[in-house]
Length: 232
Image 1 (cartoon, rainbow, N blue to C red):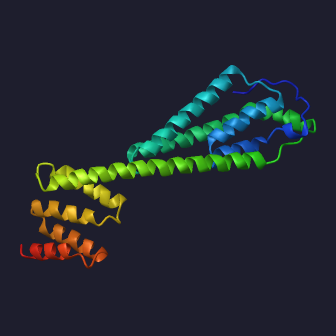
Image 2 (image 1 turned 135 degrees about the horizontal axis):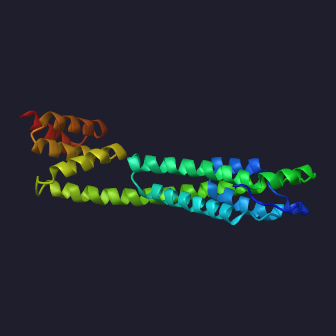
């Protein structure tokens, strides 16, 4: 989609347009949101109004990108859905970078040919850093929520082990995944050892207790439980 344009207007010192390369690199390296804001401002500074289809395409693509980003923050890390959403995000980033460039290419070339200068990189850099900081804060917040949720499920499954063996398979899968995500949590070894012992997998139970003792060599309960398992 190529935008229609009018002849470049005069620009004051603080209203110079940014180069298209600057906006595209901002989009690729920092994020499409600050790049979209600069693209919108650039339209005004170049004195152009992109066709309605171009604007719809850009803002619809931006909305899809933001939805994919929000979903990425909410789903489990390493899942197939996460990989698909990451691919969607990458594709939308490339599409938007191309659209930002193509929609302003002709008027920007005309502006430069008339001797126009481009704005400094201060605001693109500042906006990019702010956006990355916002994403980092969101990620930290989401991870804190996920960790709290995981530990609540941990306590529920741990409490259920002494009451019933009917949900052993579900608990086993949970604790195996929990062990992968939080290797520093030693009680995961204890819970897996109980599940393995209850299902006659004594050697696996011993291995879990031995891993626990590597982290906590003075854990008397673990030593006693290992001695108990050695009798089987």
